[in-house]
Amino acid sequence: MTDEDKQVKHLRVTEPSPWITRFAGLVPSGGAVLDLACGGGRHSAVFLDLGYLVTAVDKNTDTISDRLGDHEALEVITTDLETRTGPFNAHGSLEGRTFDGVVVVNYLYRNSLDDLLACLKPGGVLIYETFALGNEIFARPRNPDHLLRQGELFDLVRGHLQVVAYEHGLVENSELPGVKQRIVAVNDLHMSDREDGEPTPHSLLEPEFI
Image 1 (cartoon, rainbow, N blue to C red):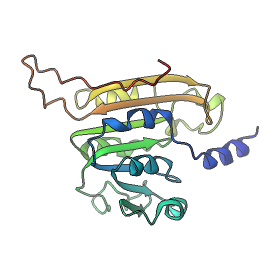
Image 2: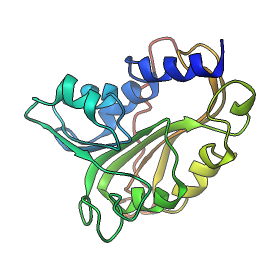
Image 3: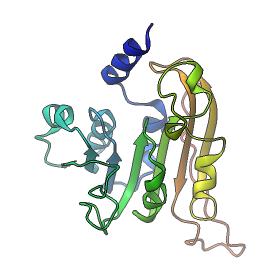
């Protein structure tokens, strides 16, 4: 399979990531979810089906608008995520907004990573999965600017969010195999009522095969 074929396959994937479906239920029920770099909307659809309000953001939103645009709980924002008119800067359309859940899959723009934490409400959940260094021997992306370093997502949330689950390694049984890093973390480190200050643990929502 050529790189071009793999790129086309990437665009055609419509099934949601098992990482997202496994942990979607950690997001506070009925809350607002940001699907950043939403693509065709496969993960927006998951949260809409679960009764969440979804804000889907991407540079090209034609596909999600065609598939889900008439859903009353969906807000679609078309914007360049990597310019001064992007969603997290002074001129952005999401400036000052916060969410109960933030979902990012197969996308990395390091300049906005800190903003992801800032837009989480207290008790909000970050669910992130994308490719990591080592993926370049399998398929795109190969540019290190688009590949996470070992432990990068863990380091991002350290001291800010409670880590519920974290993985890094080769994923072979997938529509898009490769080296991936993924994390689920909750904005509740400072909401503990325990004497030792430790946050209340969350369910790992383990898949049936574990």
